[in-house]
Image 1 (spheres, helix red, strand yellow):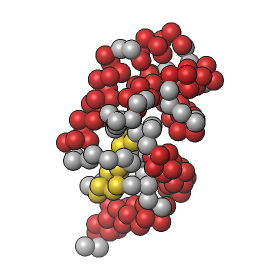
Image 2 (spheres, helix red, strand yellow; image 1 turned 90 degrees about the horizontal axis):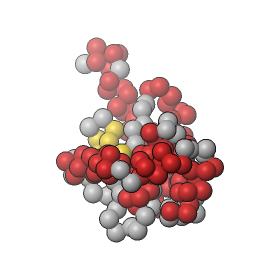
Image 3 (cartoon, one colour; image 1 turned 180 degrees about the vertical axis):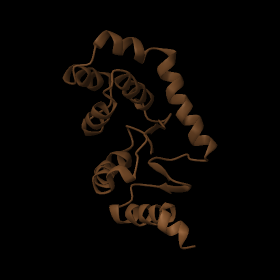
Image 4 (cartoon, helix red, strand yellow; image 1 turned 120 degrees about the vertical axis):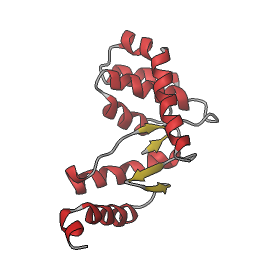
Length: 157
């Protein structure tokens, strides 16, 4: 998933992604990639903050809390740091570091290399999917890909 914490559609697709993870279990893997918008004021800072939460092994908790929060500004991020019990000094140092910026920019470059310029966007095997699609649309694609990669499907061809 290429996503932006300030993207409304990225937020809207989160319940669908959770449903996919519940339905498919270990048959699928969700990998989050940062694709912040340069036009949204808190987008890059939110991405860097999520990266830094991940450095304290709390990425997914921070991710969920940030998408659920009413905003993405510095005050909201500071409240989430406290709420999740993150080490505030370590977090602040990380957020201001070149490491966090480079990590985010690495994902941006990966998106560009795959000609992805909007969020949310997904790569399911070799298939590029854009938008906050309903579960049924993801399900059709995932089922097709799982069928193609299953040993039975390979041996019957």
